[in-house]
Length: 282
Ligand SMILES: Nc1ncnc2c1ncn2[C@@H]1O[C@H](COP(=O)(O)OP(=O)(O)OP(=O)(O)O)[C@@H](O)[C@H]1O
Ligand SMILES: [Mg+2]
Image (cartoon, rainbow, N blue to C red; front, side):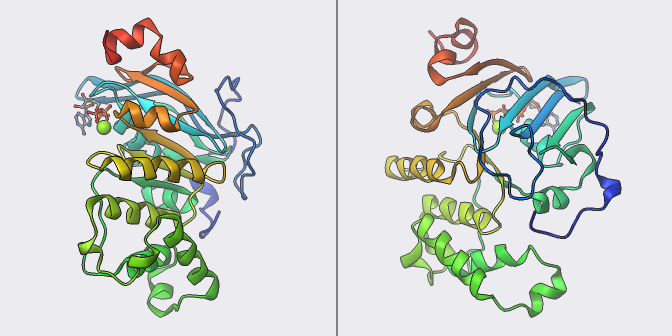
């Protein structure tokens, strides 16, 4: 964990049932301070979310292994974004269990606490500061880690500069570091936003339709980038672009009507009659 400790009272240490983890693809990467003794970085069990009686998530149970790159697919309205809203504290489930590692009860934490604990989320639309340079955007993202007081006074330490340099290389924007972000292409803005997550070194990254609107070359680079982030980071990627999913997926979960319809390798789910029926088509 990077940031200020979360008060004990916010954490439900004792309450989680020790269910069997029949998660697929459980990883073995080190957890960097997060308690991941079962190799599971994210636990969702029997989650329900309803909006005016409509069940957006319906007894959803899903595990993500440490160091895993999981793709989530499924038809429009299946509950993919709602699931990310639950994980990040934006939406409270009606009931169910949501844990980050073994000790962080996500249902009891604020959005800020969840981000500080090490879950980063990228929305579909890039939200970079257009008037600031690429470097400044990354600098700001790094400093949100601190209190306002500290970030006003803080100069970047050598380690922080190194981290930004490293991320600039990773997202291939090193030569654009002094350009205003507003001048970047749509895809480059997406990469910058991923960089803004990466400087904070989240252990779990949630990416909702990351390649929507990208060129083929940008989509290819995104695939390479995501593959290079594991197993240091664990990724949950929601995408409709099956070519992209095919190029990155170890394991795929298919959501349908708020529940897991199928889970396994891409080949397994592509050959699943129920998945073909509701999503992939014949
Ligand atoms: N705040 C809300 N109020 C009411 N209904 C909502 C709300 N958020 C989501 N829904 C409904 O919940 C269902 C699941 O929506 P969600 O956005 O999670 O689907 P999705 O799988 O992300 O779909 P898409 O592939 O189109 O992005 C949809 O029927 C949606 O209309
Ligand atoms: Mg969605």
